[in-house]
Length: 341
Ligand SMILES: [Zn+2]
Image 1: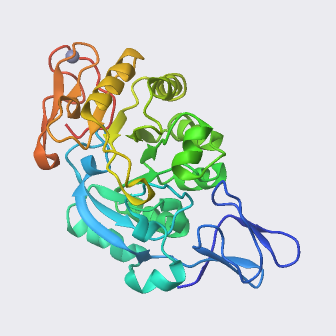
Image 2: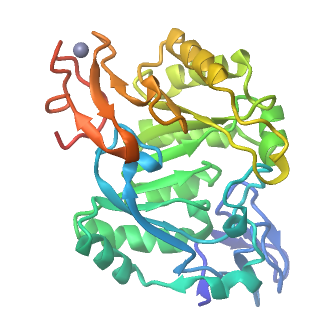
Image 3: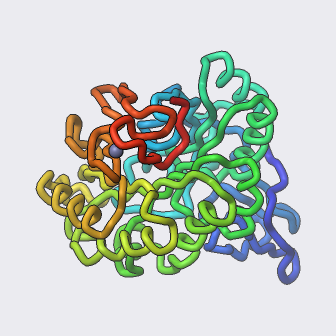
C-alpha cells in the first residue's frame, strides 16, 4: 500500500529530501531512500511499508528490555521491515535488510484499528514497535499510537534514536516509552558496529525524549567484545547518562551472541559484563542490569538507597514485586519508573 510520507521536502527538479532520519536522503524521482522503505514518485515521497507487519507477538515488557516501565505487563509487539542502520551483528537482518520490494509478500497488512483491537482483546498494557527500527514505518506507528491513546493504551519504541528531531517531536505527543540502543560512546565504535558516523543527534534525541518530552527512557548497550567493550567507553556512556539523562535512568548491558558479519566474534564473556556492571555502578548509575544471562544477580532491581532487592525477576520474565506503590518497602526510597504496584 503506497501512502504519502510525512517529513519530506522538495529539492531541485523532481527530487525530494527525506527528513525522517538523520541520513536525510536526497532521492531522485523513481528512486528509493537508503532504507528502501520510501520512494520518490513523481516528485513526492511515499512510504512502501505502511501497515506491513513482519512480526507480531504478545510478550512481557521485560523482553524489550524495559525494567522500570510497568513491570510484569504484557504488550502487543510489532515489527515491520527495513532499517536506517547497517549493524554488522544485527540479529534481525532478515527483516531489517531485506529488499523491501521483493520481501513485502512476507508481511501482512494490519490497519491501526485492527492492531489496537487486538491489543485490547488480549489484555495488553500497550503497543510497542521493535524488531526493526520503528521510524522506518513512522507514519504507521503514529497512526497506531493515536488510536492506542484514544483507547487508553500505552505506547513504546525500541529504537536506535537516529530519527530527526522533527520526527521525535511529532511522535513524542503519543509516546510513553523510549528504549534506546546505544552502540557506543564514540564515533569510531558506531562506524565499526553500525556504519554510522554522525551520532550527536542520537544522544540529543535521547536526552530530549526524557527532558523535553517527559518520555520514560531506558538505555540498552549490547557489549560486543573488541568493539565497545573497554572500560573507557562504558565510563563515557555512564557519564553521558549521568549528566544528560539522570542517574536514575536504567542501563541494560547485554550479552552479545555472534551473528551476521560478526559471527566470528566470541559471545560476551560473563566476567566482562560483571566488570562493566561494576564500572557503571561506580560511575553512579542507580539501576544497572546484565541481560541475556538468565538468573544473573544483576537481572533484579535493587533499591539505590538501602541496596535491598525491590523487584525480583525469575525465568520467563516473571516478576515478583517487592516494592510498594513505587517505593522501597525497606527504606521507603522512591524507585524511578512507572509502576502499577
Ligand atoms: Zn531501600
